[in-house]
Amino acid sequence: MLEIRWHSRAGQGAVTGAKGLADVVANTGKYVQAFAFYGSAKRGAAMTAYNRVDDQPILNHEKFMRPDYVLVIDPGLTYTADITANEKEDTKYIITTHLSKEELVKSQPKLEGKEVYVVDCMQISLDTIGRAIPNTPMLGALMKVSGMFELDYFKDAMKKVLSKFPQKIIDANMAAIERAYNEVH
Amino acid sequence: MAKKYELNEVEVWDGNMAAAHALRQAEVDILAAYPITPSTPIVQNYSKFLADGYVDGEFIMVESEHSAMSGCVAASAAGVRAATATSSQGFALMVEVLYQASGMRLPIVLTVVNRALAAPLNVNGDHSDMYLGRDAGWINLCSYNPQEAYDLTLMAFKIGEDLNVRLPVMVHQDGFICSHTAQNVRPLQDEEAREFIGEYKPVNSMLDVANPVTHGVQTEEDWHFEHKARQHNDLMNSFGTIKDVFAEFKDRTGREYDLVYTYKMDDADVAIFALGTTVESARIAADQMREKGVKAGVISLRVLRPFPFKEIQEALSNVKAVAAMDRSAPGGTFGALFNEISAALLTAGKRPVVLNYIYGLGGRDTTITMLKEVYEDLDKCAKAGEPVVPLQQFLGLRGPKLSFY
Image (tube, rainbow over all chains, first blue to last red; front, side):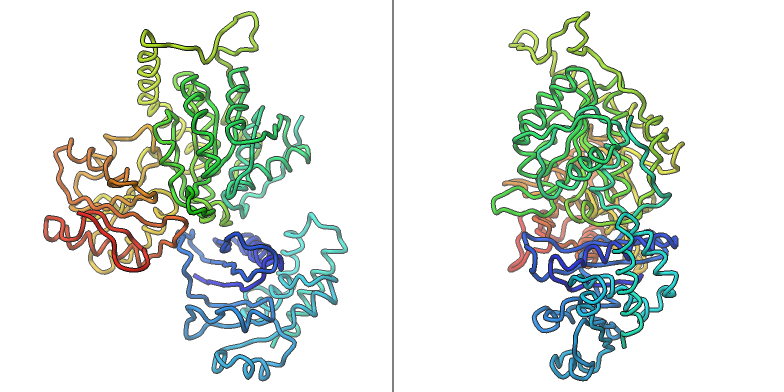
């Protein structure tokens, strides 16, 4: 079982990202789960979304999770949300930031000694999609770090997921995925 | 003519999307609704299907849930297929009309996304609304995941509309944990679903002007009792139709449903008896307990009403201790599952230990660790042959432990 926790602000697309990932993974014959914690939170409030991926049907409905990957798609949440909650020894962090990895860890000491990857999903989504929707670039970064799917396979699968959108938006998302895939480190 | 919706062999749907597609495929004539969290997306998705040309029926926006169910009653009495969706406070407001629907023998389908009842206000999942409506004379089907929410919604039409039944049917799914959790769902294609459910067969239709009828009449002490007795009789006798529909569905899809759901109960010494998504989580806990040598099983109701009394007696005939898990505040007594299971066991001459756990209220997370604690309690009682923990405990409550008896 692979488990992923997203840290996002309501409106940044973590739920859409988690569902998009689930769609792609389900097409490969695996079983998936995508869910989020809801309250009466409005746009901009800190929230978490989750994925589970397995070769067997997923029976676990607990919200509690010890994630294999933590994806932070809003830069501020590295400091204000409990992004290391319930971590495992080998939990991997992919964090949206304009800082270098060294600067980031220095600014948030609880990431010291952990497997941290950085990518500027905000800038990438602004440059490619024209709006601060950092979810699809984060998926590109996740593909690179996890090796879950080859870039071309993932892009083709995401094109299907996004097929109801105009071609311009699909192209912009593909550019965002590719740039994040290449830039995450 | 509605457009055919292109569906993949495997879709990734949450419980709400699954229920919305089932309503679309059932070709409902009238859907009257007043959306409420967490069932809002059922109605929202359905209205989008309609706007996009995938639905031939009418969608009536009303001003309250009381009116939503009243609209369904009117449509059904007029002689067409009617359905709606609701949760929590909306369900509570519908209650008066739920009794009208069953008393008038109208096969309406209500998809219920289970949510806590205020106060305090809470949008998350528990079974307070399910329990509120359990004596309303409806057939109640229970799902544990989005696939089942889809399957059971399709089957609800076929069961309720059967000429031997003609009763309304509710399909329950857990708020958020099922309704907003996307998982793999294998849908039927539109034509397969249509063929399975079949054409709507009007009975005593008000719009059949050649054969005038009256619905919802007044009966005092002369006939009221006979009407209610017949309604109860037909509800009790609906097991046959429910089983037939489950069997036909299995022939078409390979997916098997039974009145009572069991997991590893054949040799189980201890069992968790729960409803909703907890049933599946409990399977994981049961497997982990078995690795430690505790013969653990899981049992649930697929059909809450009519209550499968005999099947429960059989399924629990060899257990030494069973935990009745009630996800609803019991309001000054034991939980309803505890009472109903205890009655089934006592009348079968069985005396295993029966414990009652109140859990998960207002969406409180039910973890595998908590479920294993329940099995540990049961194991101790099974070994002692008597209750060695309190009969009623609150599971996952913050602060000091709360228990009774």
